[in-house]
Amino acid sequence: MFICKMCMKIKKSFLIYIITVFLLLVPLKSFAEGEKDALWRKNSYERKVNTVGQRILKTNEVQELITFRVPATTTKKSQVNANANEFYGVVTIERPLLRIIENDDELAAILSHEIVHIINRHGTKHKAKNILINTLIMPPCFVGDVAMACVGVQYPFFTHFGKFLTGELTDHTEQKYELDADITAVDLMVKAGYNPLYMESIYQKTMSDGTRLNFVRTHPKGSIRVANIHQKIVAEYPEFLEQKIEEDKKLEKNNEEKVQKNINQEDTLFVKNKVGKMTP
Image 1 (cartoon, rainbow, N blue to C red):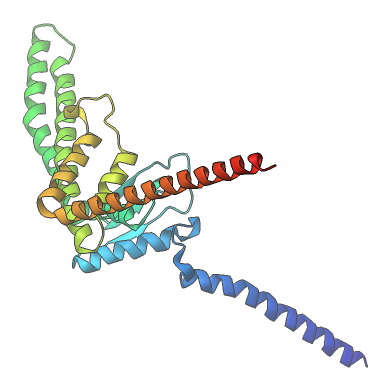
Image 2: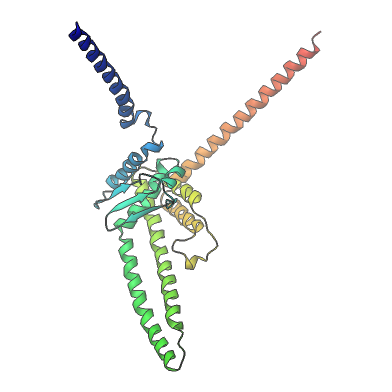
């Protein structure tokens, strides 16, 4: 009798275990398979970034070994930003930026830009130019300060000025690579089947002109970048602009029809109310 009761308890415990596992695995399975593809949920950032990134690499036949990373958590240092590590071939996109992105096309714009930095070796080229600028500017500045010291002026004016000048020049040269990454990213997006107009939209949401002069910035002003992207689309991919014009016309027409429908409904309701009040 005791053995039978033990068997019943074991069967009951086993049944509860099976039901619990089933209830846990079904949602996970649905999530893994992308049921209804709710891809912009917080927990699906990594999967979405990797899916869009690999599609860009594959369709553009990129030979570089590039991986995509989303930090596991948001920290105080997290910013609305993405970056490319050329040495390791890693594109990192921060979670605050992912919260602003609204669709695959905007994500493709950010990832394409960072991919171009890696495949065009922008980091290496920038470091090489930095070394060249320092080599050309700093030695004469050092000599100038030595000469000034000989006549009793101890303040290293030329050295400080040289450091300032090299810093601003290297920052300015970096702008060229940012603009190149924007323009080339448009080509990558189109070939991968994404709409390049969304590069304009995500830049408008995340970039500003600020107050600094364009010459002393590491990145060009947001308005300049958007204008360059738009010119690229107009010149090489005008079909996207034509498509947007048609979509805007349809949307405008639908809005007008909705407004007119609401007016008609209000007029009908007004007449009914008026007739109802006049009825004895």
